[in-house]
Amino acid sequence: MSDSARMTLPFEKPGAKHDLEEGTRFTPRFDSDGLIGCITLDANDGAILMFAFMNEEALRLTLETGIAHYWSRSRQSLWRKGDTSGQTQTVVEIRTDCDQDVLVLKVNPGGDGGACHTGRRSCFYRQVVTDAQGVHLVIDDA
Amino acid sequence: MSDSARMTLPFEKPGAKHDLEEGTRFTPRFDSDGLIGCITLDANDGAILMFAFMNEEALRLTLETGIAHYWSRSRQSLWRKGDTSGQTQTVVEIRTDCDQDVLVLKVNPGGDGGACHTGRRSCFYRQVVTDAQGVHLVIDDA
Image (cartoon, rainbow over all chains, first blue to last red; front, side):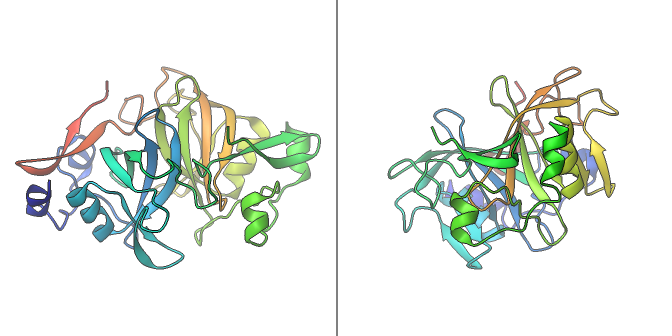
């Protein structure tokens, strides 16, 4: 996809509300830090693996290569998922929401199929539970 | 759940890395604007309905009432989903991620079952497609 992806980059500026919500122009809205949130799902079963951010370059590289790239806020650096862990994510589908300020990536996870740096498949391995002890977390990574 | 939820509010401060990632204390990390991102799923089939933000009060009210509350950045106000649209969201499960700065809500959507202000079930009704015309959006809200 690289040649045609490059044709329209850098990304166009967002238009008015109707164009943004109903149009066919992809005009991602980066926040004041230049980032857009990204929800990453396993394309095989739709499970939520992780939530991370992309800057413009990470999104451009993701579109051009078909491999998920993110922006690490803690390290302040571009991050091709899997370079260290082997958990490379091959993109199957990308979606955006009504106001184009969030992305959903459906991916085929490589390596051991995990996404979380703790070694688990998904970052969302804990439930928030309210009971007689108050509000606390219960690990549930089945 | 209201009495026990109130027992531990306001939320405790995040601890060190191991406690944050492996512990059972719920210590949500709000960003510099006092917000935490929330991915909302339909509990019936796991479909992603929307992405929105909560401030501390919205999260507290969600825990206390079992009904999803959010913070509207555009209106700068607390927002009980469904007050206008009838699309009230009854919370079935809440999860958080490894570093406790994102939430996943699984909900039973009320009203017509929709979540998006455009009238659609999900806000993620468009695919980002790359082809000979470049990168553009295709509506796919089946």
